[in-house]
Length: 492
Image (cartoon, rainbow, N blue to C red; front, top):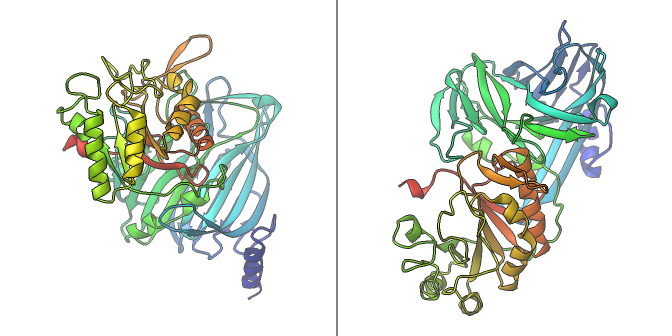
């Protein structure tokens, strides 16, 4: 009863700093903590060689066996052995927050947090913290490195983070790092047959328990895939960068959250708010100007080859065609209409070569002033389209004026696009040096944040096509309203 009263009190004030909580034990080389309801438990240990591991149980059954933690670097010794505990902190947190849009209006965020401070008994004497948050439906954990003399600049080759599942399972997964980005069919295999998989990887254990392995809050870091090393063990495999390090950091830094949603069934995985709760609150501000809605689109006839994005006799985004689509949307109470191929830059070989794209210059046969006014009178909003053709720096250089142009003509949503083969997005530095980037690489995760912030400045939301994978960032950037990246109707 006393513990129950303590948790209720913590919920009332939402956060009470560092609070010793029940169901916790600390020894010299072992620390454990459980979720507030006792369902999920994590145990962190250090073995005789100084390796740090974590293990996860749910309702007393082991889900993840002891799994290694650590890092590989390109220029200094790895972090893996000769680690010691440097202290631990524990706190409870309980809040309810409101989404501006989404499946649920209010979301409860209740967890117990365990911070484990680790230090090396080596000449480098590096220190870091692994923070675990335990929810009733899973865990999230991340690494946090303070600013320190021997890590002024960090070049990460990869993580050594493991997910050693206690038993084999049925796994649903798709391959990572292939040329066609996210557009692959899901495999259904034993967990022990997974090769290199994009996350999320969803598993069904023998007793029906479902586990989804993913990550949350992917910002200023490379996305995580996983590679099976042996048996049922998966290890983090970070998305490549343009050069040798997959991630580069200066000063203090932290990783995204590595997440395990654990539920009785698939519905429980879907209904989890764990990923959203591991993201930071709304950083942008008021979103009352945005209303979700479905849209029709001038694009499918291009996919079919009947129309073209480029100018010419088959051009699809003409005044005549778009007016017909506006009429259709209005008659069928569809609030928005996407128009692709409306701007200059599509002529010629635009795939992977979008340097002629200009999102403030309509083609001669697309009168945006007339069409936006016509749509407004019909109760329809035009949805803009910014197809970069993979020329991402070129898009960065026109972000502000492009979203200002969209807002000028009443657009509340813009669809962005990055059509090119995987690992071929073009980045150009200030000195003119060109690099090739991956969608889930560190540079691109920062690009998407720039898009969100710039779009919000003009009260515009965006839907990213060829997106970085979803990691719950629409809590932090709620104008990032949709992602299009899975295998879709183009393959029908």
